[in-house]
Amino acid sequence: WDHQDKLDNHFHSTIAAITLGSGQDAKLRREYRDRYMLLDFGLFYGRQIQRMYRYDLPDGRTLLPFERLTSGFTDAGTWQKYLSLRDQQEKQARDKDRLRSVFDSFVDIDVLYGMFIIEPGRARTTRVSLIAKIGFTSDNSWVASVGSKIPSVIKSGLRGGFDGSVAVCRAVKTGRYD
Image (cartoon, rainbow, N blue to C red; front, side):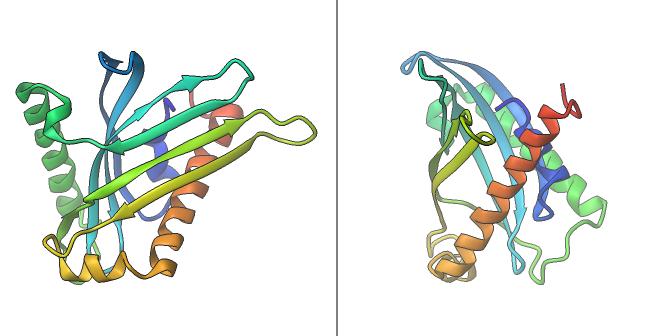
């Protein structure tokens, strides 16, 4: 929850992961974190701005739903700040020559929603589940659109992101991150 901005330390396809802002959603009355991520998909770079909420349930489980963040979620000034921070991250990635894609294009992830479900372990360790949908429209990039329709491509990306998120949790548990 608090450390998804460390994903780039644990998932090799993450070029950048930064927290843009946080607060309390007025409609849902839930705490949220807004984050930007730049992900290496091989032929292009997928970028997303997402909002994640936190629900602590009475039975000890935690739900972390997330969705694609658009300008309608924030005021104009906050949205411009987010876009500026996104642009800075992309410029840094280009300047540091961290990019290796054939086309070096940044493609917005158009479809993004899902949820992490964290359940404390009874007999073993904590159980973490991920339900997610990610995709691109053909208006955005034909390569991204075709790639997002190949289940093995999306499954591989989601699996890597999930494993990276679990690695972040393990690092928090061992005291690597406060």
